[in-house]
Image (cartoon, rainbow, N blue to C red; front, side, top):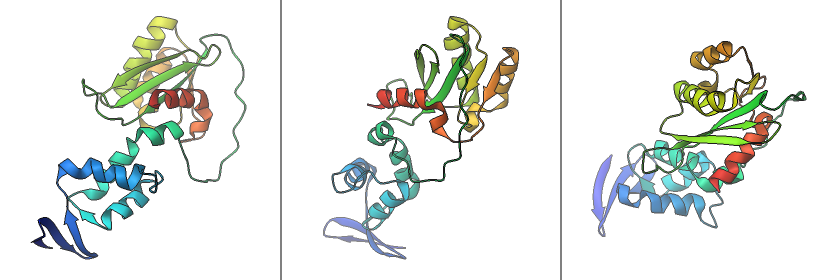
Length: 208
């Protein structure tokens, strides 16, 4: 690829034509313009990348655009989803207070002072009481630590844990904790957030 300087701008010749090379200091400005402006309409990652790539270039452009879109607070609060074929869900039976908790992870968000970028939240299904913790990484270990310290040790052992089937929710560490508590983990429809709609709505309020 050929690099040149034109009218004070650094340009590069790509297979799709000439593009302006942007320094990292200007990335956020372009992201907001191409994704969050009135005419952009908060498009998903591939569409936002297409808009940016028409004019600009920098190393790992696609990765940076996708990371920005995933961390967009406005998109997180709206939780807009594409049309999809939705499988039928079974009804969730009733229970006593503390029997059933729903668990979910939201993020990444803009980095906090302590380096946290994700929010782990659990919501009790009868009282609708929610607890949350900010973490730097959303691993199975951090999720298990949150469950034990912020749920089990404070409110007692649960009988059922509802998750959406994300990798950090179904790891060996989580499985061992559920077995230790003699509980049951329910995630019959992988990556189906409507199943844990209560905690998803709680995350919306956090994003706002």
